[in-house]
Each structure stands twice: as structure tokens, then as C-alpha cells.
Length: 275
Image 1 (spheres, rainbow, N blue to C red):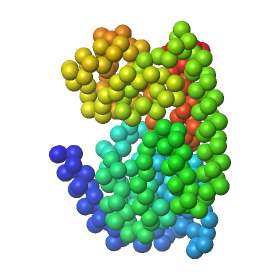
Image 2: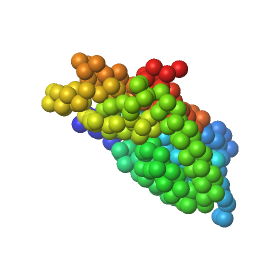
Image 3: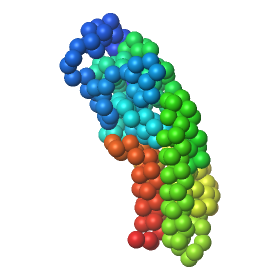
Image 4: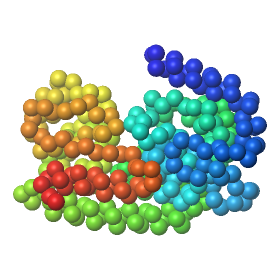
């Protein structure tokens, strides 16, 4: 509750600053914002085909880039592992004020209020953040339709399919004893189990594992636990003999979503004893 009150107070402060925003954005000075992207660009003219996109995190930003957006600015620094905890700064308003689209996730409570505080006419777009290849491909296609970049989104989807098939083949070749390993996944890392062709015997989270869950999951005798690097609660099954694999969902500053799949595959291969 205290965190919520602090964040609410922060938003109130942003709203108070919104009246001064036209003066700030009308100047020719530096209007860069934290994160990644060409933050100095202005919104396209009517009929333009290069939308200006502001994304709350690198995850939404990577979806936008995959869909064909070239002008993408990220608000929440990559160093903030839990985006809902981020307190927006006045400098974030300038980026949002110029945007055609503002992308956010439903678990991020501040996006709509940032848009309101900035006076932006941008379209607020809720993004389903799931790295399951089928769901990610569908979301990128949806954004491509929205941005008017369908061809770019289609090309990315083809690249995703090729990359996932390649990584899946490599991981299956690394299965210990040639058999699909049993895994327990945090609810937001289930996609990594699918990438490996692993057999999911249980899930947990996003809350910490309870003693009852611990007993149930340990009884499944998983070989691996796929932990969420951004919501880790420490060792999940300490006495089960399972290797814990750290899975990262958020892309880096280059907004390369395919790198998330490659990195997960590398961690899984290492855990399974591959090179």
C-alpha cells in the first residue's frame, strides 16, 4: 500500500507538470528520455508510414520493433527488473507527448496516467507479453496491422519460425539420455519449456511457492526448474535435486526479441550438459 501511495503521488506530480509540457516540447533542445530508441524524432505527418512508438519496457519495445516500427523509445530502464515498481519521471512525458502509439502491459499501472499527464493524442495499446512463439507471432502481426507495417511483421514472423525450429532441434539433440526432460516452470517461463521440447510436470508463481506446492512439485521429480529471472524468489525446489535454470524474458537494449530465444536455448543447453 505504501508503494502504491508513493506511485500515486508521483503521478499527481506528473499531472501538475503537464501544463508546462507544450513549452518544453516546442523548443529545439534535447528531449531524450531513458531507454532505447531515437527519442528526438517527431510524430509523422498525416499519411506517414513510420509511426513513433513509446514502449514502457524493452519487452514491449521489442514487439514494436519486430512489427516493423523503426522509431521506438523505451521509458523504463533495463536495470529495473520489475517494471510495475518504476516511478515515471517528468522527462518521460516529453517522449510520450510526441508518440503515435504508447505500448504497455496490463500489469503496468502507470501507462494511461503518463499519457494523460503528457497531453498526448497517442493511441494507448495494451500488449500481451508472452514469448510463446505462436502467441508472440500473433501479437507482432496485430501490431504490424496497427502500425501499417504488415510486410515487416510478416518477415519477422518467418524469421522467428526458422529460429525456433533450429533451436528446438538443437535442444532436442541435447536431451540427457535422448529423452524429453521433466521440468517445473514459473508461469511466465513456460514458453522456454516448449522451446526445449521438455515435459512440463508442474508450474508455480507468480507468488512464492508454498510448502504444499513445494511438496507437490518435488514429488514430480523434475530434472529442471525454469525460473523467471525478473521475479525470482530464490531456489524454488531446494531439496528436489533439480537444476534451476534462469530464464530472461526481457530483451536487451537492442530490442532483439529473437535474442531472448537464443539466450534461453543457451542456458537450457548448458543445464542439460551440452556445450
